[in-house]
Length: 70
Image (cartoon, rainbow, N blue to C red; front, side, top):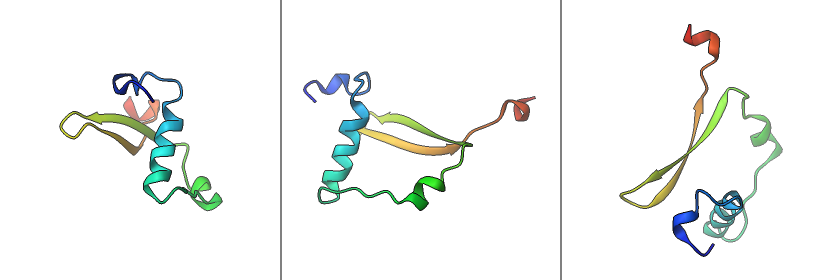
C-alpha cells in the first residue's frame, strides 16, 4: 500500500489488513471453521483509528436490533 492516508478508503484495505495480521503471526493466519461459525449475525465488526498510536482498531460489538430501540 503506497499512501498511508488512503488506507481506509482503499477497496483492497481488508487484504492489506489481513496480510499485516498474517505477517505479524509468522506469515500465516488460520481461522477455524468453528471460529467462523461462532460469529453471530448480531455481531458487527467496527473499524476505527487511534490517532495517538496511528493504529487501526477492529472491534466486535453486539448490534442493536431496531425493535430494541423503540
